[in-house]
Image 1 (cartoon, protein in one colour):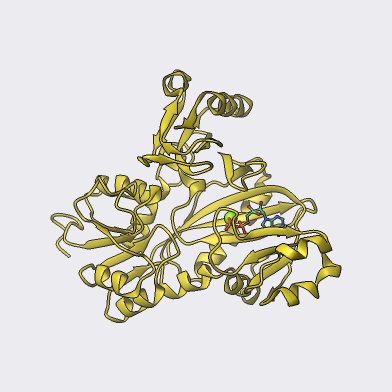
Image 2 (spheres, protein in one colour):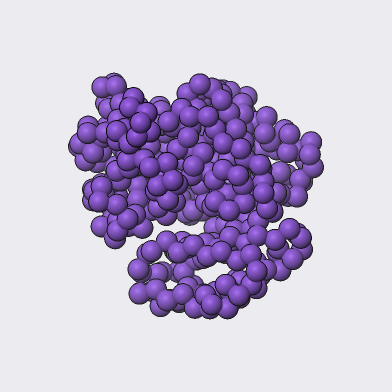
Length: 381
Ligand SMILES: Nc1ncnc2c1ncn2[C@@H]1O[C@H](COP(=O)(O)OP(=O)(O)O)[C@@H](O)[C@H]1O
Ligand SMILES: [Mg+2]
């Protein structure tokens, strides 16, 4: 490798050009990396930011294969990609991070749960069902949470079955049917691992969900958990990346339940919504850490520099069309408020249009500022 220009000769591809790709690109500029992006949407958040932006399906074998043929290293910002094509590229000697087999296992919530059980990762007890008929047989164990094996995202593809009446909405496809956890807190932890086996874990974040949309409304870090729990969380995340022989950054979503159990909910094999704040709050952002990890470079410090919150800017209900951000100036007048707009021209209800990072050392004030920004800043049309 020609070190004179650092990694400029290495062609790096990202499958997906959404907001996560955009923030990866932002970090890649600092390292002067040579990034190529594939996304089906010609107006995707990355589209106007690089000449190396290709429009094409992420799930089509030929499109992904042809995109990868000319590259050296390929990574993802979304897991719904054609893994067969990535496997073929891997066989030809391309480096794929994370490994295609890992992406395949995580793509399907059924195989993901099975992996947890096989590898003694604590998670809620479950069964796998293939048809509605099989769900009907479990009715005496209700309430249960049913999750579609494939194709769900942001809470779509997940529902709680409480009564016989709910059976009508039960999925008639391969699904995970799991114990309904009495959730005390939902937390997430980001971990990175490079090919040398070096592991680094970010401070945990606590997620607060939108009451109806099943989306993270805001989160804050560090989370309100004991040092003992934090230690255990770090141990579990480290165990996961080592057992996966993982390369890159991964998000581990967890539940702390009312009985003090730590249960892994699900994995996201890429930078994650729960790590946007790291751009400003930790020494190394999740995006830079992902790039360091896939390049097998030393991982950066994950020391927390500022307690932070991250508020998702979701399209307001009742508005669809050309986006207008209302209240930006007023929000910017609050100390420690840093907005981030994703460059999506069209808003619709609950679409992720941007986020705001809020830095504030005092926890109570931090949450107050979140509420203020939430009231001031609106995504309308
Ligand atoms: N076993 C469970 N018990 C209680 N609530 C759950 C359970 N599994 C998921 N949920 C709730 O549903 C949300 C979405 O589920 P998740 O599996 O994370 O799917 P998604 O892929 O949509 O993020 C979780 O963040 C949590 O609030
Ligand atoms: Mg989730």
